[in-house]
Length: 112
Image 1 (cartoon, rainbow, N blue to C red):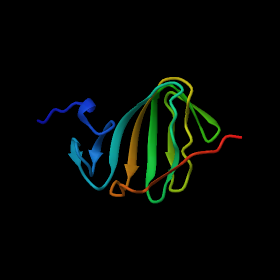
Image 2: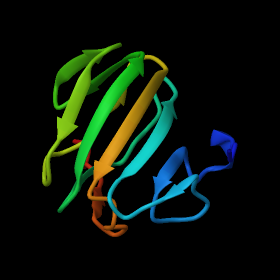
Image 3: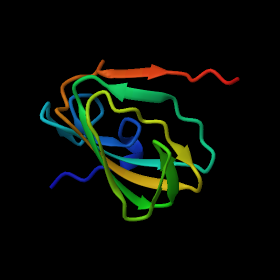
Image 4: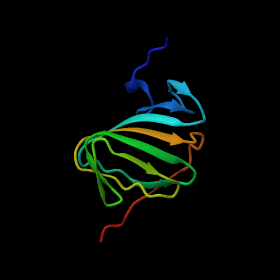
């Protein structure tokens, strides 16, 4: 049995096609993400990747919808991720397929 620590993984991602990783695969990526209340997160979308997310704890707003503990939300390709972290949030995220490292498109919204 191999035992690793999440703190040693790349940004909480422990399955995927990158290093360091607990399980190397191109089929999907899996990660545990912790976001602090008020953390600024760049708005983004993916061209080919679908993201399946489970909000373990916390409250956030995404696409003008309030999501709370236990919510499962899925972002298909080209759907915008524009999170606002109302409280500290823990998220388990799966991306599939996982072999598109340059698939994410980030952008900033201009404030009036």
